[in-house]
Length: 147
Image 1 (cartoon, rainbow, N blue to C red):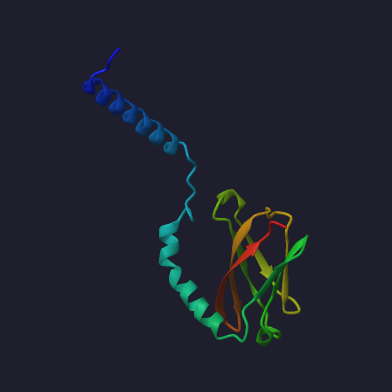
Image 2 (cartoon, one colour):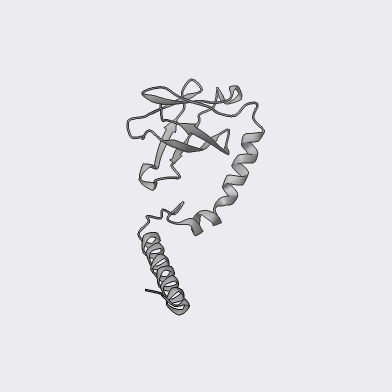
């Protein structure tokens, strides 16, 4: 049986339509997490992040962040040793919003210790916002908790 060129074009066009419909259906079922639920409000407050980053850059060293099996330890610069350091640490997971966590801390002996009990084994972007010497500071660092 011989198929004419008109039927071949029709079959090709039909296969293309089926492919496009399949791709649209598949993409509509994907889970999409926003970076923040209130991204507009956060954008308006972003000047605080800029100012905190500038204040952080004036310190002698950045915050040293390392993880052990049970905790995440933040080591603050030496010039903040005599000051009260309070703030929050936001663990941001770009792959799954359910893994995000925001934990308040208060440093003692120039260190803050955060328990890993509520954290997942994934890559995090650590966003540390803290106050010392009547100034706001901000630092953003990557941390791998997959070990």
